[in-house]
Amino acid sequence: MGASERGYTWHRSGDGDAVLLTGATGFVGMEVLARFLERTDRDLYVLVRGADDVEAARRVESALSTLFGDERSYLRRVRAVRGDITREGLGLRDRRRDELAERVAEIVHVAASVEFDLGLERAREVNVEGTRRVLEFAELCQRRAGLRRLSYVSTAYVAGDHSGCFAEEDLEVGQRFRNAYERSKFEAEQLVAGRRERLPITVLRPSIIVGESDTGWTASFNVLYWPLRAFARGTYLALPARREAPVDVVPVDFVADAIFLLSQLQDAEGMTYHLSASPATSSVGEVVELARSRFARPAPRLIAPWAYRRVLHPMLVHSSRDARRRRALERSRLYFPYFAVNVTYDNRRCREILAPAGIHPKPLRDYFDRLVEFALLAQWGRRQVSRAEVARGSSRRLGRDAQGLERVGPVGMHLDTDDQAVAKRELVRH
Ligand SMILES: NC(=O)c1ccc[n+]([C@@H]2O[C@H](COP(=O)([O-])OP(=O)(O)OC[C@H]3O[C@@H](n4cnc5c(N)ncnc54)[C@H](OP(=O)(O)O)[C@@H]3O)[C@@H](O)[C@H]2O)c1
Image 1 (cartoon, rainbow, N blue to C red):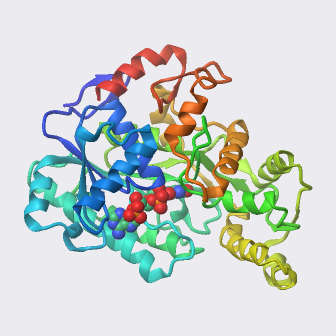
Image 2 (spheres, protein in one colour; image 1 turned 90 degrees about the vertical axis):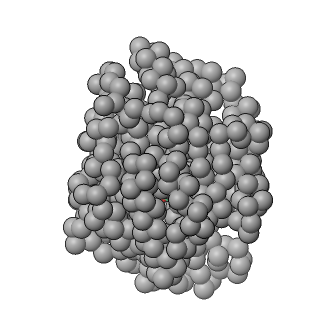
Image 3 (cartoon, rainbow, N blue to C red; image 1 turned 180 degrees about the horizontal axis):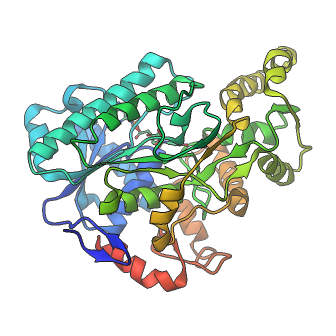
């Protein structure tokens, strides 16, 4: 039986119930790592690639340093496990794997290859076969000391090119896929769904994840950032997009808060949640307007995607003498399909369960300028700026935000003042 408070029933944690986290050197995994360290006193095993144990340990220290500004922070509770999800037994020796399975009570599987231009074979190797290995390890944990939860981070893009409402309980709806990433994540979810009877699984599907809403910090300059960067440089005279097309963007702090909380709640077992922005979903028109006003550039014309693809894009690439501009145009093509979608990721179940903790995504317009400020500071990913650095710089400014909500801890959630004391107590304890 779990502890129950404010409508939430939590796992009962005890001694020797460590968490195994994959993907902790990546954008989302790092933020999830921070939450487990700051809000629990549990030990964390972090599966990380490396040529040897020393390199694996060094990579984890580097993640801690990026997060907290000091690699010694929490080092006592974090153990680097050199491994690779694409390899048999996660690339661990039998004895090491068995020992780990005795200690691990929860797994949060975040690792994946998120490149949109990856070939299908490689995408499947990491995202499908990698997930299969994690499921196998979860079954081993189950047989040994018992497994409380496997939280699997999927993506709302498993919806592919589906048009209309995509519900949290939907998976196969006759969709096609825009790239190997989407397809491989869909196939991975099918695998995960096949183990639901045997394992205590929670599936989490974020939409487009951008930087922290408070500071703009991000370690990843994908989906939304590429077009913004090209826009900032004046690369786009025209965009293949529909003004009213939804752009579902969520800040990483919301995503990590939600993953952390849902991985701990008994009621979340067996469920799938859309970590999406609704009802605060943005639109192509709004993003163009925000970018136009931030970069003081004329808005590009929005034209029908088919016309752009067949006629305008080849012309623009051909006539562009600047190699950098040509590359930006080519690269943007990967992301353009996301600005002509017609899908809404219904998140009613997610909103309902997160509401008592006050976890909800802010509308993009509330933090858009912060995202851009950080992107400019980090030169769109060319310059490394640690999360600790920006948190220090903005901590005074962010003591209280515009809505009068106070931060709880260095990466705290936004909580209504009334909920603050209780939720803070709950999160720290569990
Ligand atoms: N970013 C988004 O907008 C977004 C949106 C929806 C869902 N998601 C999902 O969120 C998750 C994390 O995405 P992200 O943006 O944080 O990606 P990311 O920054 O590229 O991080 C990927 C992580 O996976 C690890 N990894 C990759 N291959 C591995 C392997 N063979 N063995 C062990 N670890 C491996 C990477 O380790 P290395 O450091 O060794 O490369 C890294 O830690 C993914 O499951 C993704 O599908 C992301």
